[in-house]
Image (cartoon, rainbow, N blue to C red; front, side, top):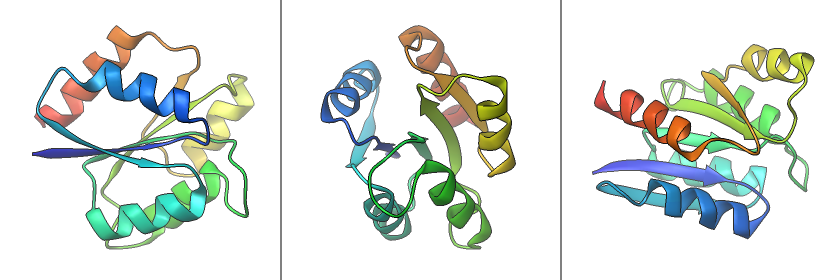
Length: 122
């Protein structure tokens, strides 16, 4: 079973994304902070992480992305930044941090599902 980690400080956003993804056979994991995301990612090695940029605490999504992509144990996890930060510079910062893709909130659930289906099919 494929695993997806949803990282967002807003529970309602995590639930919305989970409902969007609940069509297939997926194990959905949650994290609300950068520190929690690192712990869950290292412990469970998800196939995909949907990662918000702006989160409370020491680590934001860009920090988490950089750390995971530098770690040989987690560097191959596909990371999609899923964030309200939609300026071109924000997208460039996300991709520079190692993100594999970048979606801006509000996002198209169908577009996100298509992207995830394609990633998990590989």
